[in-house]
Length: 86
Image (cartoon, rainbow, N blue to C red; front, side):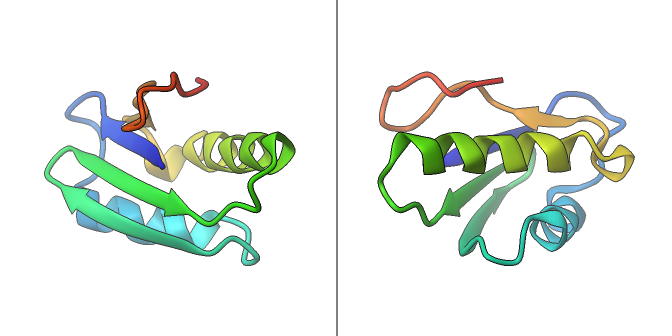
């Protein structure tokens, strides 16, 4: 699971951001999202390999670099206790 958080007041609301986020991710990624006021928990279906995990992180990082998602970033923490990449 990847968690994105709103880092500042410039970021759009989570409901708007999740539409943009999911729309900009590669179409071959199966994703679901849970929204909170300042966070989006994004569940990305993976094939279990480290390479696929890294590719998913890279895809989300590239999407978050889009100016339409300004103010949002990866949280840096995973629910399973493993550190997420920035």
